[in-house]
Image (cartoon, rainbow, N blue to C red; front, side):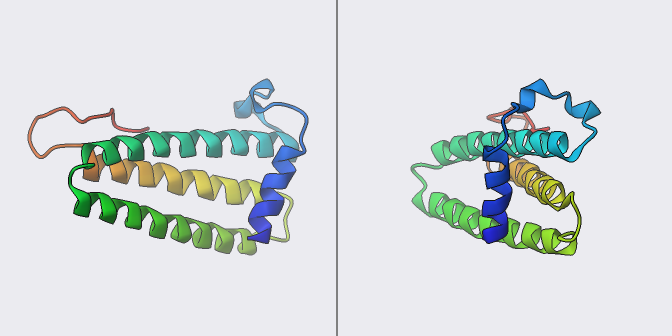
Amino acid sequence: MIKYIVFITCFISLTVQADEIFCDKASNTFQMNQCTKQDMVAADAQLEQYLGKAKQKYQKETNVLAALVHAQKVWVNYRKAQCDAIYEKWSGGTLSGVIYGKCMARLTRERTHSVWEDYLTYMDSTPALLPEPK
């Protein structure tokens, strides 16, 4: 938990906005941290959008909705534990925060795709409720 707070605090204290940095050309730890933060925020926002749509779809199927909410809570704990372990592996290096953030964003994108596939698509040719996440 402390690692995550330190990681986020570093981002809050930074004065340059992430959109001022060209992430494909990030060349120092500061820029990489900014770009990683931007990626994490975007991944979280997309996941919330897809979860919201899934919850809306299943709002009258209370058992499905409750199971989805429970699965999401468990997944959040898994993501944190997994990325904490990755952070620990790299804790001696200057890029440990970047690696942690990349882990968080990667797992979040994977979860978004799972939510899309499991809750927002159909078995027949009916179009999905949202486009396949990238």
